[in-house]
Length: 275
Image (tube, rainbow, N blue to C red; front, side, top):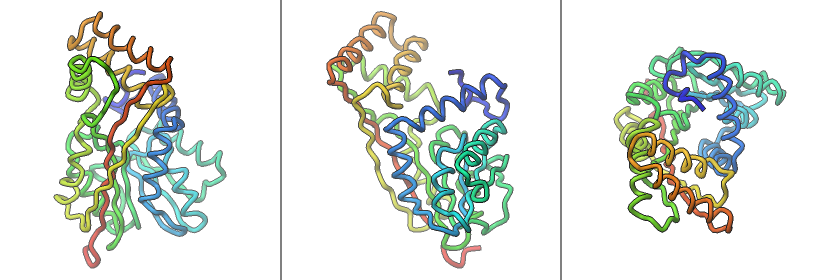
């Protein structure tokens, strides 16, 4: 897949199709599907609520949230890429929930909604791609009604654990990927500070650990990509790349593969009387 995240507002047709396919496939993987379910449970949408998702992508989370708030409520999905919004609308239409979802093109740093509009706002796997999260979180808080809920989730790449015999090589692969590819891979540990700085109240942190034993998971595929980008970036040699992945292939074949990563869900509220 091309690095379509680099400038999602200017996706070409091919890159947009690739990104939609990638997001849809990732959302169906068991590790990501489990994380999505846990996020929705923590968001706790109820019928009749008006909920905003920032960076909705192809609608993987809007769809189940819409089902929770229907029939009188609505989820609004915002994304900067019109191709993502079109894919999200198709998913909602296919689920026969068109009246429970609405999609809007816009920038997260300047949300096109009035102050106090929503009962809840959330962003999942978004802030690691944002150069400056402060205005995004501030805008999420602004559009909440007093007492409204704000929830964000990100991974922390440096929490990855991989069962591999070569510790030094594994650290080189993972540290290079953490520091040089894919955005701010320490975003998970920074979420609490960002919410507090934005004036969010009653901030709580819920750690989620995603463990995988199969190649058909998002984390496993991320490890193979990590080896590729470490090699391409000169952090490891071709021989080290081949050797590191050979062990993972062997353990997968033997049913002995194990890896995990930590995510953080951080949530809070806009204080009552805060307008």
